Image 1 (tube, rainbow, N blue to C red):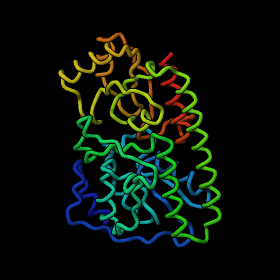
Image 2: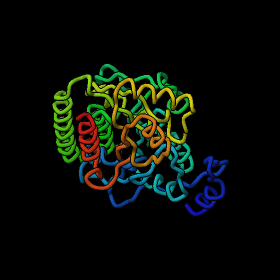
Image 3: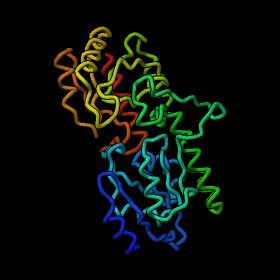
Image 4: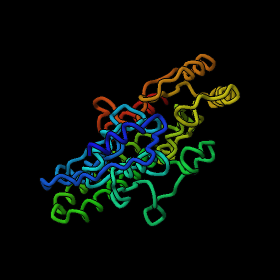
Length: 311
């Protein structure tokens, strides 16, 4: 990998300009361990629910770091080269993984895009991101499928199916892990459904930092009154801020949620204008500290915070 990594290091900049450099392929470890490398801590934890301890699972983007603005390093290429399966969301969320695959000399067959290819046979309908104006980031489709536990369950099934096909000798272990993971996700979904159903529909309204909670809101019949920014890294215009302030006042929303990996002064400005309180922090694209260091812990923490804001 030495020459390839030096070549990549020379060309890997803010724009991920890989140029013509190609890393030599490093085969997966010969110790018999099946290795899954996920783009984010969220997908890594869903992979653990899918395969359990039978497989080594790691993530590229550390917990607490934004996947939208993450800048891969040469060492990430080496990790990809040594992995058996690369797990990503797709739908434009972690598009940088394609260049890393190329730099690592990996075939596209090694990439499993969890959010792509779902349809009615999966019991899934995509939300259209064009309604929020965030078309450029995700090609018109809301990529945050995992924030609905039913969507996360589809991810677990896809990961388990792929790992099982790659390593039939681990089928029993993977099946057991997947079964437990799906049961845990179903329990989480029931808990959240019961919790939100106890709140009158007219009170189920909230404002988030960015447009990530559409599927979560759809699952539990919550109205997203607005978002502070359309996409991470973008600051809203004065017109957009004024429109959101008006929407918050009209809806009687008293709380605005920030997100762990997205500090922004605009939330304080909106709060000052509306009298709403900025509450910290929801988890969307990254996990955090315990108890939000697992997918289930993070989603449960989100639900508890949102429910408390409705009281």
